[in-house]
Image (cartoon, rainbow, N blue to C red):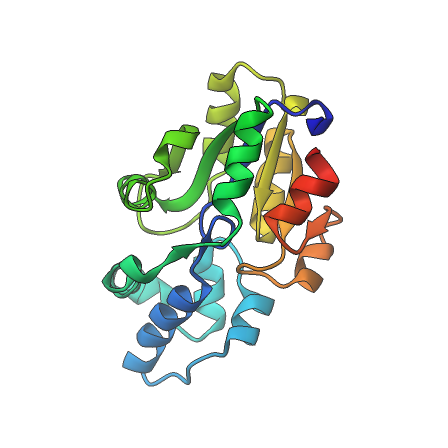
Length: 214
């Protein structure tokens, strides 16, 4: 069971919570304010990347001149509807199965740390997680350093941890920390984009649990 894995580190946005729609709404709000044509869900999932500043620049936003304003504006638009964001339907069941199997779980997110913890508590699942780590600001620049922090504090070796995410950056984060990665294709990148990493790609956490961990 678990293929030797003792801890699963989950990404948050697009992996445990279904928030692609909210990110898209917030980005389009930023674009429309500046007279830039809004993007579709398909375009978003095929092109979204980290650091998000690169993605925003490709959309025509003035990153050099307006980065702070854009980041804050996006954050305000995202938070305005955050209470409508739900967990993916299989999340609780998967967390329960992992707990029964004695596998610890943690969260690592490019969401700002306090906001992340508040959101996890809002959805009443904080009791499951040993570590909940978000970044230090609202710029969504990356989280590789925090993956290393969790690994160091967990007491586990790299091969005892699996990082589960929904973007190419999640794969890159896992590789930089020396951990295995598995990707789920219902979030911020499409299956086709995720397969380009060479990591195993699953349609849901339930499929990942059955095929990779049990």
